[in-house]
Length: 357
Image (cartoon, rainbow, N blue to C red; front, top):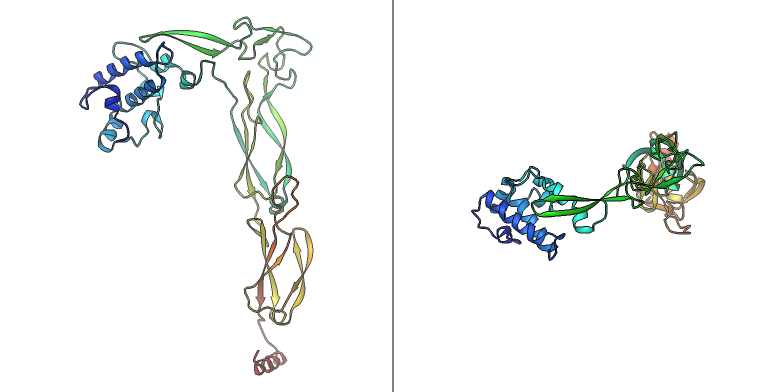
C-alpha cells in the first residue's frame, strides 16, 4: 500500500465516519495553507485521505486492494475534490466547497479565477487532392463574438469608459467567508465590469455594454498539406467570446473524400497501373493521370507481377518551413490477362512456349 490514509488522519482502521470527520477537521484547521504556519503538502494529504475514507465505496476498495479504482478525491490520480464534501460536517451547516473555494485558487495562488469562452467544433469535408496539397476554406460560424459596433469594450462609439466603481479598476473583488476553521479570503472576478476594470459611460446599443454579440462570423481556415482523415485543427481564440475573458478555441474535424485511384501511405501516394502481359515482358510506355496531371510512365521488362515503380517527388508534400520536399508516387503494376485469345495469338504463345518463355 503506497499511502496509509488511516495513518495520515491519525485514526484506527475501524474508526467510524464521525471519528474520521473530526480527525480531518482538526488537521484541516492546523494545516490549511491560508493559515499562518499551514502546510500545503500535509493539508492535501489529509484532504485526499478524507475523500477516500468518508466514502463507503472508496473505503471498501481501499481496505480490500490498497487503492481506489473509482478515483481518490474525484480523479484517477487522487487529490482533493471539494465536490465530494457537499452537505457539510456534523454540527455545521457548511458546504466545504464554499469554505475552501476553487482548488486552483487555494493551492495555485490567491488571485481571481481566469475565465474563458466556450470551445466549439465544426466538421469540414474536403477532397482527397485538397488533403494532399492543402487548401484554405471559408466558413460561417454562428457564435458569441466580440461586438462589431464597440469592438468589445462595451461603450457606444465615440464615448468614453470610466473606472469600475465596484472594484476600483482592479477587475476583481476580495471576499471574506467565515467557517469553522476561521475566516478565509478569496478573490473573485468583479460582477460589474467582468474583469475589464472599466465600465462604459454610455453602453453600446448593440451589445448593451457587454462587449459580446451573437452573430455569424466568417472564418478562413488553412488546412495543411498531408492532413489525414479525422484529424483536428485547433484555432486558438476562434471559439465563443466571453465578457472580460479570453475567447475559447475552435476545433475543426477534417473528413476526406476517398479517391477512386489513389491512397496515402505516409508521405507516399499509391496507385495501380493496368499493364498488358506482353508489355511486362518487353517493356512499354503508359500515360498515367496523377494529382499533378498526366505523366509518362516507362514500364521496363518485369521479373514478376508484383513489382512497384517509383516516381520521385510526386507524393505528399513534407512539412517544414520552406520545405519543397515531397514523398514519392508508388505505382503497383496490375497485369491484365486477355479474356479471350484468337487463333493467331494462341499460335504465337505456343512458339513462345517452345522458346521456354
